[in-house]
Every structure is written in C-alpha cells, then in structure tokens.
Amino acid sequence: MPKYLVKFVEEQYMPNFQNLNNYSIRLGSFLDYKITEDLKRQDGSEGQRGLQLTIKKPCSKLDEFITKGDLQMPQYTKNELNEKGNFIPEVNIMDHEHLENFNTWLFSCSIVDNIEDIEKIKDKFNADNYYFISDIDKFINIIQHSLSKDLQNYPYNESGKPRIQYPKGNNVYLDGYKNTVTYNSDSKYMNFTCNTLTEYLESKNTRTINMQLWFNKGIKFIDEKEFRFIIYPSANRGEGKLYNIDEMSCLLNVDLNDCISKTPVDIDK
Image (cartoon, rainbow, N blue to C red; front, top):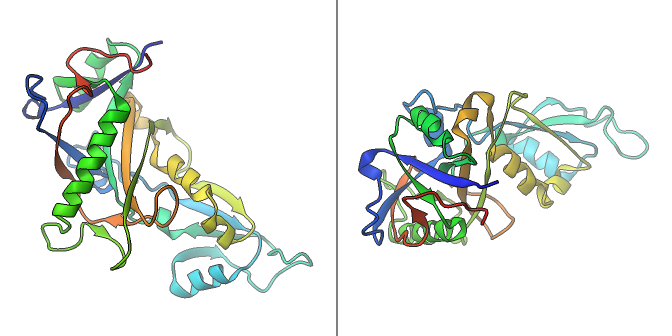
C-alpha cells in the first residue's frame, strides 16, 4: 500500500518549486504545541506523558536524587528491605525529567495511504496548501545540518540566553528520531520496572521510553495522521543526557531540491 508524507502550510509558506535553493522552513517545539493559540492542535502534555518507575533495590543514585529533590516519591520505604535487599514493598517514583518541561525541536507532517484523505486533513489545519516529502532521509539530514549551522552562528535567543541549556565547556550533539505518531486514550503515565535507579539511568531503556513518550498523543488528535521528526541536543550521540532548548521555534534556510514534490510521491517505493 502506498504511503505519502504531506506537509500542510499556509499560502505564505508554500514552496516555490521553481527555486527550492533557499526555502525557509519552520521547526516547532514541544512547548510550541503546548501553548499554541490554535486550540485544535494545542496539547498541554505534548512530549511529557509522565513516567512511573518501580524500583526494586536502593542505590546511591536514588539517595542523591532524593536529596536534590529531583524525584517525586509518593511511596518511599527505604528502611524496609527483605533478605535479598529488595524494598518491601517495591518503591514507586515519578521520573521528574519526563514529567516536567523538557523541550526540543520537532517538525510535523501527515502520513496518508489514500490521497483522498488529504482533503479531510487540510480542513483540520485550516490550510489549503500542501506539498509532499519525497525523500525522508535527505529531508531530515538537510534540516539537521542547517540547524547545526544556525546554532553555531546564533547560539543565543532573543533574550540573550543560550538556545541550548548545557554545562559550560561541554560538547553538544544533535540527534533525532522519526516515526509515525500513535494515538490512544490510556493513562498519560507509563509504568516501568527496574532493579535500581542507576540501572535505569545507565541503560538504553531511557531511549526506548523517550520514543514512546514523544510519539504518543491523545486520541482526539487522531485525524491529523501525524508523522514527526524530532531533533534533540544531547551530551553524546545515541545515548546520554538530553539538554533542554530555550525557544519556541526557529526558522531555517534550507535547500530542498530533490526532497519535496508538488505531486504525490510514494515513500514506500
């Protein structure tokens, strides 16, 4: 079955297909979606669905987080352990990082397998104009490269604060995900069990959890048929600490030759 990636835009942002060398593309952010004035698209919990961790055993990292106040702990019975060193009962904590205001860049479009669906979706976005993304990998690579250059040239926002919040002297890398959004009416909290907090923080589970959080939206948005590209700053590529961004959106000048089309292009071919 064919698949088409469609980007709906206002008339002023419709590409000039006679000259795609210097097209201005807008990246939004989680925060952008949270407080947008477009009530149809506003999602107050965008990017953060909340994560409840079940911790089996104590560790120094857990004590450190409690001391710093980085975890919400509705149940914590540190002094109750069984002969195996497990908490009695198991400790339930809320992962503060996922619950609070993590913000990063994203670019959204729609994925359809029937061209006729475009007419229905464009009413949702109040946009009569749209184009097709014909080469996903080239499209996102160009955007990521342009964002990297933009951050080097303009590292501060309009308030004079760093656009990326990271420790002075540290390296920053841009990484990203791309995927289809899933929609459900379940609780906004995910549940995850691990032996210790250290094990959780040092494992690849955090990456898996981020994927589920970032590509999961409420059922009321299902008509959007969203496919999204997420770009985030981190301490190293692939894994490591994520850094917050301090901006709602940004405009990038990009060369979109051979990545977008005026006519439908099946991305599965």
